[in-house]
Image (cartoon, rainbow, N blue to C red; front, top):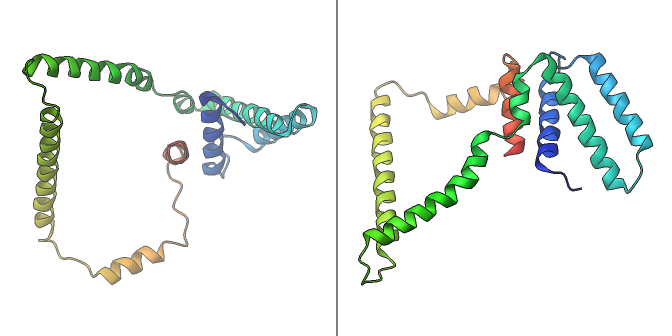
Length: 185
């Protein structure tokens, strides 16, 4: 199977919608049945290899689910399209590295080739930044220690008590978005 990115996004989004929407709030039972019937008919009428038929049926079914959901819930359209910043990142990142390389070439001594100075400074700066983050987190931990700590075993017991229960589906939009992000990335 060879899907392009747009088709794959729609398939993953359709999977997230169907997984999260167990009560039919985004896509009603009649709409699901219509989409399923259309997919079954397309599968019967499709020709070609098994993989290409499966790909076309999956892609069409996912597109139908996304379109039906977008009619009532426009926020799903934002998940179906890739973010705009990805396009600019693909253009801007190589440009930024080119400019950084040109500026570091101009700043350094042109009569001396020192390949380790810039990378070494970057590593030192990174380490200093990480030490600062660790220090801030340690200080925040000291502040929170003033509050009484619960026993580790009691916390583990509370966590294990909730394992068999399904979380409340309070925010369907957040659940669909989280499932899509989990499967897409």
